[in-house]
Image (cartoon, rainbow over all chains, first blue to last red):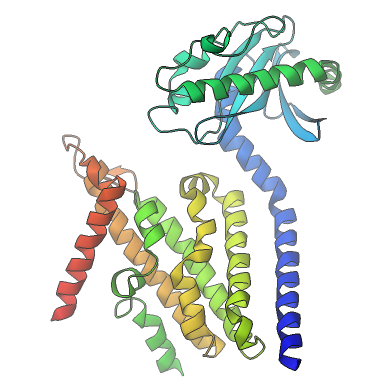
Length: 198
Length: 197
């Protein structure tokens, strides 16, 4: 009986201490990790699609909550006026979630550019979505108000990459998600951007 | 004491070098040794976990009931692995992206649990730390050696710097997964040849 109790006590105390320690370290490193993720994952994609802005979109960012999910928005400014906003949508690809950064022109609601941030697609096949700009460049210029973000097989406007249909669909789903988010949150987004400008 | 500490430390470097003599920790060894940078990063992460878990297991060796010792060891090891994972994300994010899933998988690395069970659970803290440090550095050396061979032949570079000249045609097979097995096999063979004398 004594042995039984000591087993339970030792294991419980050990787990509790380790849980507490990890929580402390997690809190301590949280902000740094967030910055690192922004710097190494999002920044290259944002630079690619917000190329004609003269501010640092990473700096002019804000967060909104949509359906219990926190989304970070990056504002692109030209001559100190906000012209575009970029944020990330996610879609299921062949090897897991594909993160797609979508930049939107605030005036026209057109897509300014699309770029893949994170993916685990097959190298050389699905990974072309990130490495080869031909596929994602199809999205640029399409309007969020009337374009259908799906591959042509499913009745959409996008030509799939040959041999990588599932990845192509995943990217489309991610852009579609971004479209939905934008349509739901547009008033909020505009309000936040206005606050940033002041 | 100092003598036995030195003995425990040095055995991991040659006589019981984990990868080549004990043939433990093969999963990360095969998977991450595509480049020297990855090899060293993985080695350092494993060394940190080994030293910390050995120390803690050794300190708690009289408290932990023998029936649940493996569970306790795993909790301790998993904690330190998560610490490494968080720290690496915060301070060496590009390396974290390259090593990816193999960082959390240090939890199930046989070397770490093996040293806790075979050594740290029965010996005083200082000896356990010496053992963990030796084993960790030995593992790092072995990973570095294997990854140096693979990166050099497979890409013509070491730590990203050209070593075999521009005209070298990379032998990409050695960078792929089967090349890892062949490379490791040849190095084991070499170690056995040397050990025979």
